[in-house]
Image 1: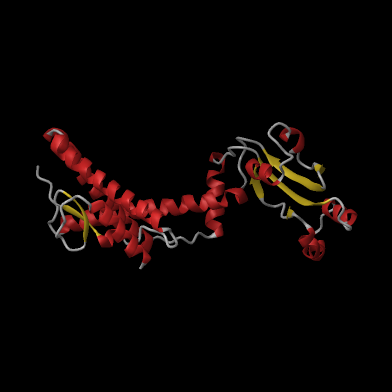
Image 2: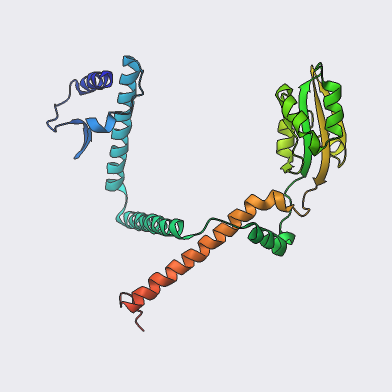
Length: 281
């Protein structure tokens, strides 16, 4: 209700001194085109003040009018040759949008997006020489906790002498950590390392990121414990586990391309069969 009252007041102000419009529901006109009350009903967020609502409505109407006036001016002043070229572009763009939407829908319904582990690994083995790391990749584990943690000595000992049999210990003490990552089988890029371990920088990375290196880094009242498990340098072969999401995308995209080719061939063959498509020699 408040929106309607505010919009009405704003339109009344806009209409002052102008000829009343007799088109039912119209709030503005440019030439033969009208902007209607229904077009502006939802443009004002709930809770907006009367003053701000009026400004929002006026700004919207002004933008609408300016857009229409510019189109009208362009249609009058652009040469016929230029207009014909633009119309061809518009028609081509419209055709592309329709065909893309149609093909996308067919592909969405037809392409299997489940990729078996065996297919992923086979694809990787056949193409692994083509998969190079863009930057350094690291396997590590880390803990970030307070120095005065009463269990610090035990935590430190178990962290650097990490064993899967200590899973219960880590589950019990994880709430005491500010952050942590204990799964050192996962490869991560250096951007994630810099984000999680801010004391490691591009300047000291060669000193810090060394396979097998154990790090105990105090930062204020906290301390970071880090164990670097392995490192892969730029342009070296990227590991399978790191590439799995990318491999899946590549395989699915390949299926989509194959499906698109199949759709295009089938629709052409059907048109030839039904005599809807002929080539005259």
